[in-house]
Figure 1 (cartoon, rainbow, N blue to C red):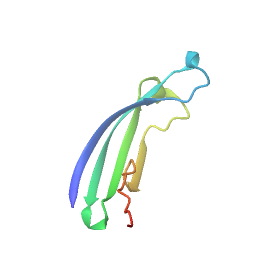
Figure 2: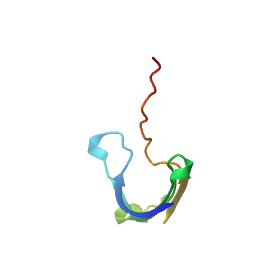
Figure 3: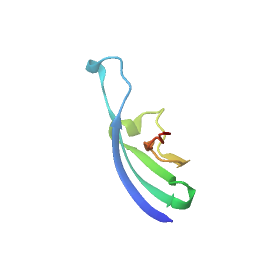
Figure 4: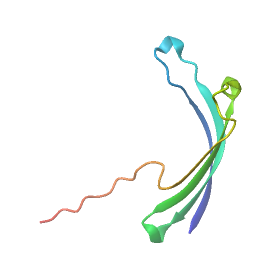
Length: 83
């Protein structure tokens, strides 16, 4: 088993036009546990906290937590060719 940590800063927003873009920011920490016996499956969790103007919006949760048993991004695999 391999264990690792992650730190991140994130910014983004959904908008109708570039003139109305107002990105919101967050920071966070995460953990990763890799189990090579399970075909590179990763158990991961992330904790995010909004900062700046996004932290004061009434619809924004003060803390977000995400847990998954998968890679954050899919890994390409080599295709087997049959001759």
